[in-house]
Length: 332
Image (cartoon, rainbow, N blue to C red; front, side):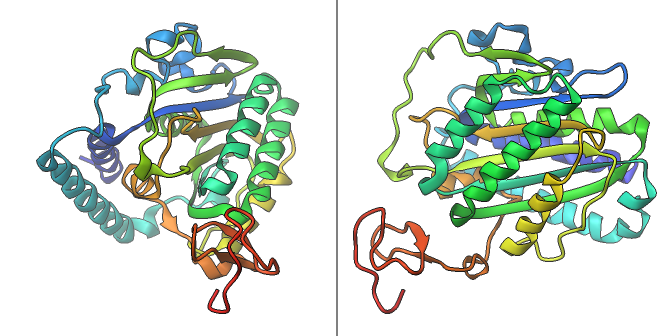
């Protein structure tokens, strides 16, 4: 068994264990310019229009609708597999880094940038992504480049609310680019059970029927967070993140992506979860659902402080918290 095959097999088991903790709702949009191929619904997703019967992609079809309500022994098993799997994957990567193809030496680049956003920007960001998906930009090269610029702009505007992040990029051959892209897209869409909106290659599908059981936010989830994944196949590489827990690395990665032209963007997929206002994800749930994300150094976002009363982030020059009105103490 090759090392890469084993890594993918281990990741499959890892995601299956996470399914019990999957978020309920999500949304996605994208498109691709691969010759003779389509985007991530080619492996079976919600683009068929039958969104009321479960529209979060083929990988979510086997998930139980009762995730997150298992007993403590089940959760312990999940955490054991998660931690053990991540440690083993990290060890294997450290052993084989020299044999990986560098982006500069390959014809295409597969990259992903994932951001966990706090409650102060969650609602606005979810609305912006839903509106962008409704424009159905994925069908043309110019539309895909515009989609990328708009997503980057929305994430840049939410910088004060960045909490968690992860960046990856690798060189891929032209023949391997599409299946690897589909794999990454389906992996991102498998983190939730119901896809409320799916915009792909110029088409749009929304969930037609309400769920059998309404979503009720739990008090411990608070105002909730949102995770946004930006997956790209491009003709140009990006600088690798040496310290991915620093906001400067994320800022540079976003700025670099914003300069991509329509001729350089081969494929794009944007996935966010949760997508419903009532579906809240606390930071504790985020860390379980997305264990690969690193918590950003709070000091790496210049001028940001956190309210001692409500925990909200805001500009340092303000004399009171704009979220709860509490006066800024000297210790903050």
